[in-house]
Image (cartoon, rainbow, N blue to C red; front, side):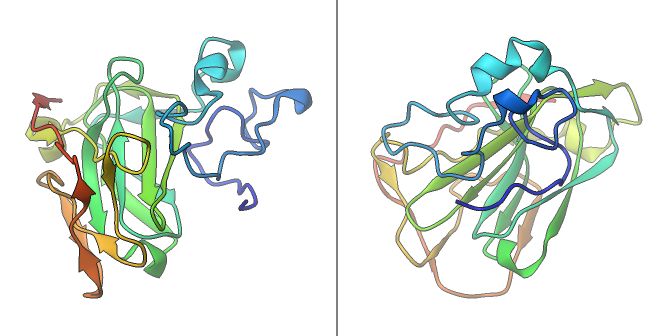
Length: 199
């Protein structure tokens, strides 16, 4: 289990989230989602926190602004939900290179909560944070159609290959490619949806 870091946006359950009480800390925030899928999305306790004061917004972002998150593993995606976590749409995909930098930027098109998710070795990780999105300048990301995030290794019949970075089947229009390395396509029933929306 990785230590919790005070890197914004802070998810509900984080010991650094100002909305949390000391007895409500989730010490499994940096653990992979269950292979059975029950913890998708956002981890097993997100629904509980989201419906309580601990789920109050931790940041206010303007639509069209550039934000960032920190992460240190594999291929990853920044995404957002505008339907309370039923679906997550890709803001930016980072293919094979997440270990090379600690901070990743993405453009906000609107919606709540925001999320960051990343791939380890045959594991899916996902943290979500509740943020307020205010009207702003819009920007290219707000006009572009966005695919749903890639879901794997959570009991849905789709898995990634150990020790390889994955190329996302539908990464969206905003893709950052890391250094060329060992990549592999996912295997199994990876019927990644092509359903899109305009943010």
